Image (cartoon, rainbow, N blue to C red; front, side):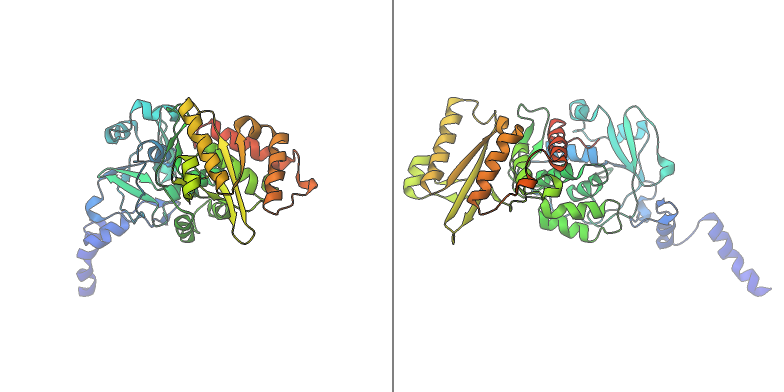
Length: 382
């Protein structure tokens, strides 16, 4: 009897929730389908509320708000409170940069994340997405005391569940490149001086995200991402050239994109600069191979000075011994014309494109449809 009496206080404490701090934190974690979340909530933040931006709003942040000359540091682990999902809470916690102009490309709504299906709400001002609470390490950055943003790597992983495969690879090229879609700009994108991500960092993130939905597709897309693309059309060109036949490409090897080429004094005099950055190039010293593919967009030559500067650059590369192949938007859009140019590039780099892999194959038509639609929508994820 004495033994039972000794246990009464413990039972009472259990029932009223008076437990040591380390246990209170454990039992108050958010859950998904009855499984314990790996996103731990610290005891002192149990009653706090966080606005967790989902991938669509997060991608717009990285494209249009985050400084163009900065590389994000690797995201570490974060603690989260209750997820804001009601209109009142979302509007209260919105950062200053989430203006009406910012939200316009998203249909004027905020996309937020919750980790429990019971928290999903319907609202005219926000779209609530339910994600698996077992978050991979590095999935989010904390912006302030009450807001978190999805990391570029986590965006890529989640996008694998909603995007066409070719569009997913194009998203990877954007994240690892020098541009970000921005519908408010005349050319439709913003130049970046530093990429948000590298293929190696993305690979490291995916290695510890095997349990997460979309991992297989994201991992399958990873080898086809080409780093250092500087525009959506450069991404289209390089994917059309290098994706395997089964995905609508021509299986050419990856070129070097936008890497510095030091010019000789004579070439520098012609180019009116000491360094050039070819859009896409193949260099093989053993074969004395130097091929440069340049894409001329309609906004690249908006003035006479732009045209003169570009011609000087091309002539400087020719002086360096480069075989320069020039592409325009109209040539790329016309499949027959584009294929003639691809055959020329393939011959120069020693690659044979077989006849059975040419023409308007179903895979090629699907690739062109998906990536052109991706570009026209300014890379929308919603």
